[in-house]
Length: 179
Image (cartoon, rainbow, N blue to C red; front, side):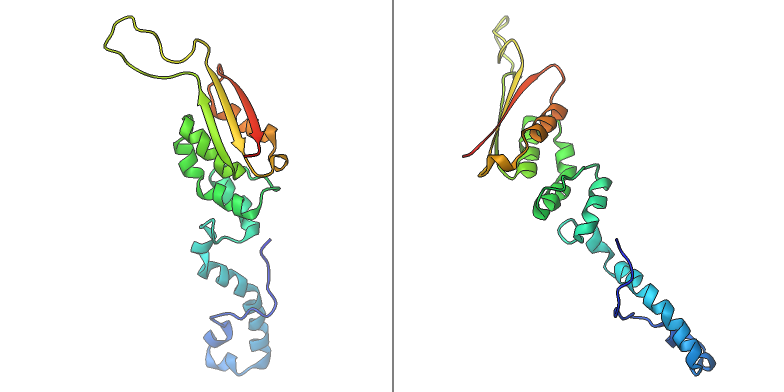
């Protein structure tokens, strides 16, 4: 939560902007300096505003709010570096949503591991009429996540990501293994 920061100087003290007659009055200068203490964090935040919108520079307590702007729900158990990477890649992940490469990239950012996705279906064309369809009759999706510590990755969270990314009629299987 943002608030007052003790000892933070203001770049533009209000007492310097007062007419000369008020600058001579010690009470008025002390009174106005109270506003400087309150306004200093606000002015400092406004001076650094572009950094708040960059996931790699934003303060840690601002990441949840920044993630909400891109429609991402962060897991509090993730390290801060993974949270920053997820926010930075959110727009790209949404653009690739529904594709095998999009699912793979999404899971690699969210788990920090290497992801293999096997899709049984396919799209192809043939110059031969009546040729066999590519892939298998029943669509299936197999996802294998290779991470150094499989116990650190929630299989149910990976399963939820896969369920949200695939078509509803496609069955899937998720594995989290060590490399």
